[in-house]
Each structure stands twice: as C-alpha cells, then as structure tokens.
Length: 143
Image: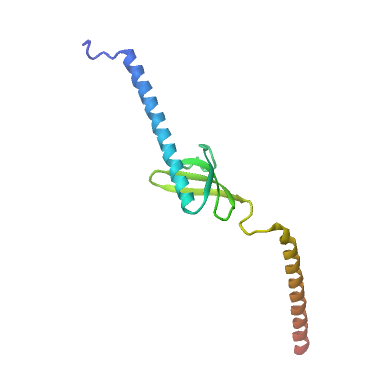
C-alpha cells in the first residue's frame, strides 16, 4: 500500500466538520436573505414588520421543496395587524398563506359602530315595509 494514498482519520474528521460548518453557514446566510426579502416586500406595500420567525414545520411544509417557511407578523399602512405563513426561496419569491388579520383600520371608531348598525337596521326595516306595501298594492291591482 502506498503511504501517500492512505487517508488519515484526522483528515476525515476535519472534512466532516468543515462540511457541517459550510451547511450551517449557508443556511444562516439564506435565512438572512429570506428575512430581507420578506421585509422589503412588506415595506414596499407600506407595512411595518413586527417579527419574522422560521417555522420549518408550518402548514404546507410537506409539499415544499426548496422553500423555507416563516411566520410573519406585520402592521399595514391602515394599522391592521397581519399574521401569515410565508414560503420563500431565492428564485421563487414570497408566497403568503393562512393570513389572519386583527385590529381595526385607521379611521375606525368602535363607539359609533352600534349606533350606525341600529340606524341601518331601522332604515332597512322601513324599506322592507315599503316594499311589502308596494307588493300588496300590485297584488290588489292584478285581482
């Protein structure tokens, strides 16, 4: 056996450690780029990102190939809070799914909501009664 061709066990361990470090480094860089991509899309629409959290086993993870999944929380320009699962990949862009909203939009005043609903209900009752009278009149005219 040629001594130059014999691989030292220390060399194999070094290569394994280097490969693991390389994979972890690539994943960290991909995560940073993903977060920047998500933040820039939300900011371009006037939103403010609250948090971006990697969730590898979120809904939809089973069918994803090269996409990474994140739970994203943000507030849009109307002050409505959103929470969604986002799939993102370098070449595929961002895809938001399972979006949930909470909070009220700008200009919403909940103090007047009950009064507005009551007034609308009264208007619809009057309109309904008028239509019933008109229908009864039409039925009498036909007879």
